[in-house]
Length: 313
Figure (cartoon, helix red, strand yellow):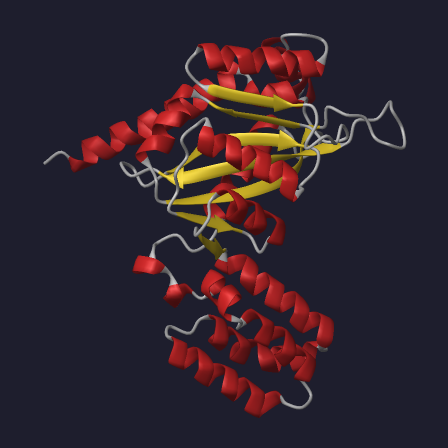
């Protein structure tokens, strides 16, 4: 038997397990109903604020709700594309179903320090309205009460969080801040100039105090102005007080250990690898299937057992 034959057989088995109906929307609703009967929470919206072109499907299992309640520190949120098919057809062709977005909120478990997804949401629009609806449901129905949020450099995600959790500390992933600065550097300057400026620019981002950041910025301007005026103007926007506190690590309360979104991005990468989603999108119901949920719970419990064994004198 060839590898492709084995892969096809595995996919057929997953399909049989995950599809409660031939109709994706009905199948998803039936899965959410089952999650609710088992002590979890689920929500399906076939319109967002009256817009029937947007949908949202969200869930958090009984086990995830327990982890959510026990971990109220920093939560990481990120989305991934080309993992799941939308429930709505393309506007250009009603026979084609485009890719949707899978959002995951993840925490670092207090007992094992390993990453645990506590909430999922699938939608076809990364809009503020969609994210706000999801976060409001998590807050009011699921009891989610984070102290901080870590996101990529996403204005949409930040705005949605601010609407639902007022006075919430929102931090930008350090890795993505570096990526954003690097893109602007390459956009404005050639390779030779970029190589000369990169170290000085990194010194600004990695500064450990406000004084060192100001000093690094002054050094950058002294070395590269006037040729880098456009880049300096861009960097100064990141120095505005409301933006500075989102990315400057030294300003973060307690100098927390989590400064990137790598935990949730690693989870999404593993998910795509396990489901073969790197080559094709899956129906939405496969992500809420019982086997997937059981595997998540088993992995966390195994981590806790190993951690407890290592702590035994």
